[in-house]
Amino acid sequence: CEDALRKNKTLIGPDQREYHRELERNYHRLKEALSPLTSRRIPQLYTDLLPHTSARDSLTRTSLQKIEA
Image (cartoon, rainbow, N blue to C red; front, side, top):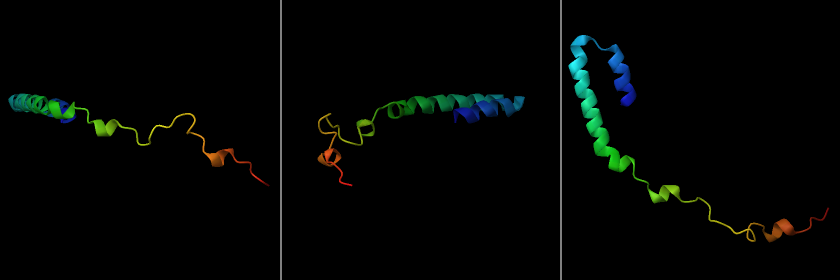
């Protein structure tokens, strides 16, 4: 929306300036009203996908086995 408003401002004529100002005011009101939702961190989105492993657990027994050729 913000990009569209910026672009629109360069394209409109003098007869549309008041309408454009109203669009900008409404956009800022909407942005302010939605800010609690858009700025909130959702903990589930920031958790690791894989469980943490300690250095000892990072090597499995199969990785330590000798390969017979």
